[in-house]
Length: 184
Image 1 (cartoon, rainbow, N blue to C red):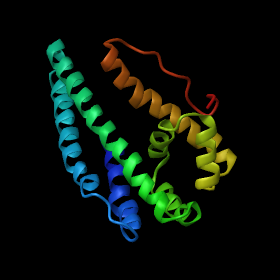
Image 2 (image 1 turned 45 degrees about the vertical axis):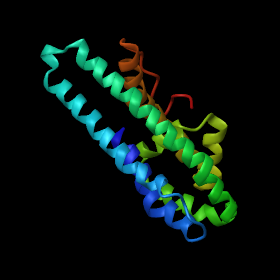
Image 3 (image 1 turned 90 degrees about the horizontal axis):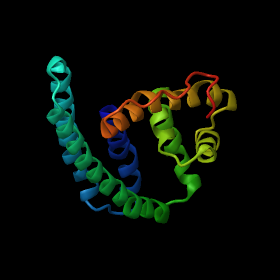
C-alpha cells in the first residue's frame, strides 16, 4: 500500500505538477500534503511491523490502534484526493486539452508494473472505465488487458484491499478468483 501511495505522489511531483505549473500556479498545499501523508504511512508501517514482531502475543488493543490510525489516515488521504479533484484536475483541464495530456498519461502508465497498474485500475468505478483507460489512454492491446492487467487487478484486490477490509471487519474475507481465467 505504502509503495502505491508513494508512486502516486512521485508521479504528481515529477510529472503532473511540473506539467500544470508550466501554465498555472498550484496551491502549495497540494504538494505540502505529501510530507504529512508520508509520516502517517510510516506510523502505520511501524504499527503493523510491531504487530508482526509480536504475533505470538497479539492483543486486540494493537489491532484497534492500527484500525484507528488507518481510519484517520484514510480521511486525510480522502481530503487530499478531494483537493486534487476539485483544484488540481480543474486547473489541469483549464490549462490544456485532453490531446495535450495523453503523452503524460502514457508516461505515467509506462512507469508502472502490472502490480502498480492493478492499484490504478482498482480505483476506477467499473470495467468500462478500466477498459477505456487501458485502450484509449495507455494504448494497451486487449490480450494484454485480459491476460495481464485484469489478473493484476484481482491480485491487488486479494492481496491488498481484502486484507485492509479484514482488519476493518475483524474477520476473514474469502479470496476472489484470480489468474487469467478470472472475470474482470
